[in-house]
Amino acid sequence: MVCLNILNKMLISSPHPKSGEKVGKDTMGSHTLNALTVKSIAASKAVKLRDGGGLWLVTKGTGRYWIYSFTFAGLRREMGLGPLHTVTLAEARDKAEAARKLVRQGKDPLALRQEEAEVRPAAMTFGAYADAFVDSAVKAGRWRGAKTEARWRNLVEKHAKPIRAKAIGEISTRDVLSVLRPIWGEKQETAEKLREAIERVLDSAKVEGHRTGDNPAAWKSNLTHVLHKPDELTTRKHHAAMPYKDVPSFMKRLAEVNGVSARALEFTVLTAARSGEVRGALWAEIDMGEKVWTVPAVRMKSGKAHRVPLSVSAVSLLEKMKAQSVNDLVFPGVRDRKPLSDASLAKALRAADTGDATVHGFRSAFRDYATEVAHAPREIAEAALSHITGDAVERAYARSDALERRRELMQAWADHCK
Image (cartoon, rainbow, N blue to C red; front, side, top):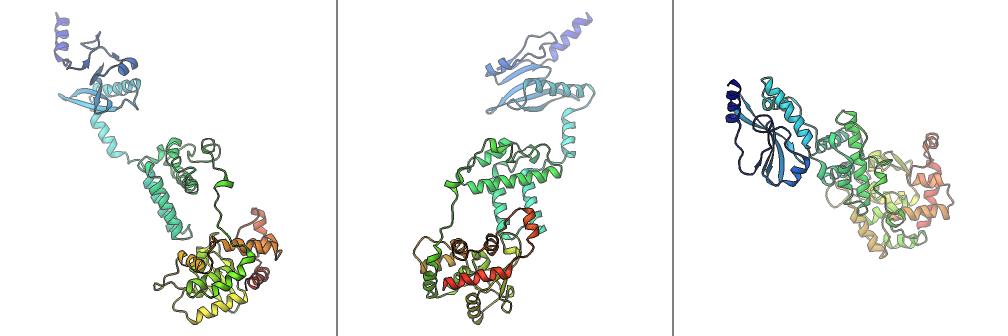
C-alpha cells in the first residue's frame, strides 16, 4: 500500500506532455532516462524532445537547444546547456547530470553559474588585444611614423574585422583563413601583411597568457600547405623607370618647369632618395659646410639614419631654395608648414615627361648607371640607396657608411644628369 501511494505521487508530480513532445517509455517514473538517440534527433521535427531526467531538446527559431528543467525551492526553472550544433547528446547528458547532482546537494545550478560568470573575467577578444598591441607599439616608439600605425590599424580593424569579436584564445587556423582567403591572390601584398600582423598579435597574446599552443597564423609548416603564393614573376609590380641615358634630357626639361615641386623632383633625382625623404627634408638636416644631408631614422624605410653626400648640383639647388625659404621645410608645400604631397612630384614629372616613368623609378635608373657606367662596387651602390645588404655577420663588420666613396659616385651621377 505504501509503494502504491509513492507511485501515485510520482505520476501526479510528473508534468504531462504537450503537443509535439516525444515521450519515451519509462522504467523510472513516467519517463525513462536516455530516451533519445542521435538518429531519432536527426529524424524528428518535433518542437520539443525529451531525453528524461529533466533534459530536453527544444527548437527556437531555426536553432535547436538543450534545456535542463528542474525544480528548486518550489520553483520550476530551466537552464540552457547549449545549442545542438556545438553540444552533442552525450555532452548534454553529462551537463544535465552535473546539474542534477547540484540540485540533490541543495544547490541551485543556475545561481552558481551566475556567480561564476560575475567572478570570471570576460575573455579577451582578438580585436581588443590587437588594438592594445598597436597602442603599445605606438607608445613605445617601435614604428617609424604615422604611416606604419595607420597601416596596422587598417589591417586589424578592417581586414581582420570578421574575427575581432572572437576570444583571442580561441582563434584557429580556420579563423585566420577566413580573413586571408578573400584577398589572397587578389590583394597579395595586403594579404601577406595581414597574416604577419595576426601572427605577431597572437604571438604576443601567447606570451601574456591569453592563449596556448601553436600559432595558427604561422606560415612555415602551417599555412604554407594551404595557401600558395602567386608566381612572383607575374605578380610583382615594379616602378616604371626611365633609362639612365634619357635622364640628362629629362633634367633639362624639368629645369624649365616652375614651382617647388619641380625643384624637389630635381633634388630627388640628384640624391637618388625616396620621395618621402625629400618631401619631409628640413633645413636642420642639411650641413652645407660638410655638404651632407642626414635623413633621420624616423623617415627612413630601414629605420636607421642615412647620410647623403651632396653633389655640386645638389648644393647649388639647395642654395636657391634657401634664398626663398619660408619655413623649416626645404621644399615647403602650399599650406603653411605642410610638406609637399606625393602627387605634386608626380605632377612635376608629367609636366616634363609624357612617358610611363615614375618618381620612384629614378632610383632604379641610378642603380643601373652605377653598375653599367660608374662600375661602382655593389655595396657602394646599395649603400647609396640605403639598402641593407649582406648577412648579419657581414653587416656587423660593415660599420662605415662609406660616405666619401659614395660622394664620388653621387658626383658622377650628378655630372651625368647635367
